[in-house]
Image (tube, rainbow, N blue to C red; front, side, top):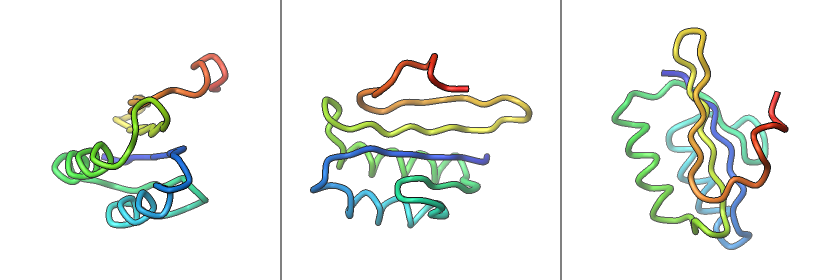
Length: 86
């Protein structure tokens, strides 16, 4: 499945989060990644992210493309309401 992932984490965790995401996806901008992942790799990525992020401070968003549909999964705190998204 094709994924787009973005994160907004505390300054002390940015470098570690970058390393985790680079193992699985292509880095396209500061905290934005994209690429194909198997279900197993996506699960491994989420497990590693959940070990590092702080739910009350950080936000990690995964967009998955299934056919013509876009699904969104948020880990942590969503910074803005979905109405701001196109």
